[in-house]
Amino acid sequence: MPLYDYAPLSGQCETCHGRFEVMQRIADAKLTNCPTCEQACERCVSAVALGGKYSLSQSKIESSGLTQYKKTEKGVYERTAGSGGPPVIFK
Image (cartoon, rainbow, N blue to C red; front, top):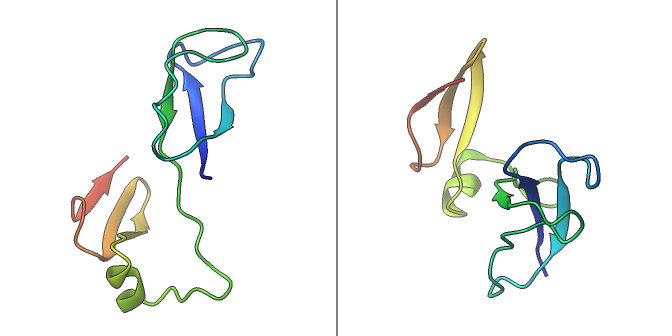
């Protein structure tokens, strides 16, 4: 089962420390409230961890349906593999 990250909509919580993880089936509905403090919450997008026996070559990333970005300068990331998402991200 996948592990999902959630965060309260307010951004802060003394009880759950602002972020928590829940193991859920993919078919399960997203949580709307924190099970500890009962504040409204949202599911967060997390980075995919690839490594070990998995190849990080450009062709392997693209065939997996993923997109890779590399930092080119402060706050600017350019797409180096894949076709999803914008070609440049400014943060």
